Length: 157
Image 1 (cartoon, rainbow, N blue to C red):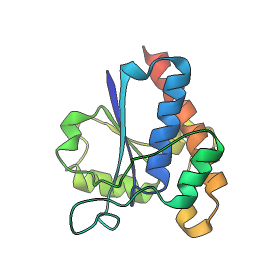
Image 2 (cartoon, rainbow, N blue to C red; image 1 turned 90 degrees about the horizontal axis):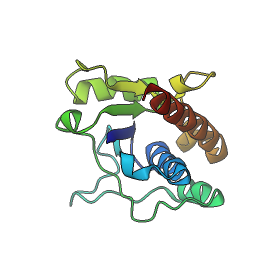
Image 3 (tube, one colour; image 1 turned 45 degrees about the horizontal axis):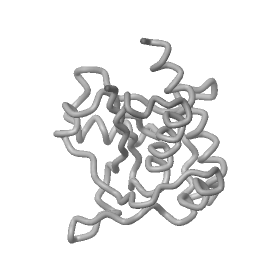
C-alpha cells in the first residue's frame, strides 16, 4: 500500500483539494484500496484551541463539488514529525510548504518530500487561492499535478 500525505499551509484549501482529487482519481481507476491518502497543514492556524481543525474552506469545497467531488467531514490537521515513518510520500503545494515540511519532519533522509507541480510540465507552485480567490486555477493545477503523480507511481510499478 502506498501512503501519501498532501501538505499545504492551513489544510483548508489546496492540500484537502489534492487529497480528494487524488482519491477520486483512484476510485475512477478502481485502485483506491492500494493507497492511503491524507492531507495536513504546516501551521496550526486552522486548528482550534480544542484541537479540532476547521473544515475545508467553503470556496474550495464548492470548487470540488463543481467537479462532483465531496470532501465532507474533512477537518484541518497538523503535520507532525511522527508522520515521517507513517507515509511513503509527502507532497507539498509550494516551495514555502517544502521548507516547512523539512523543518517539521526533521529533514528528509529518505527523500520522501516532493512538490506537486514537479509532476507537471509547468513546474512551479500550485496557485494559492487564499490570496487570488481563483479556486478554478488552483483546481486545474492540483488536478494536473495529481494526474502526473498518479501516472508516475503507476509507471514505477
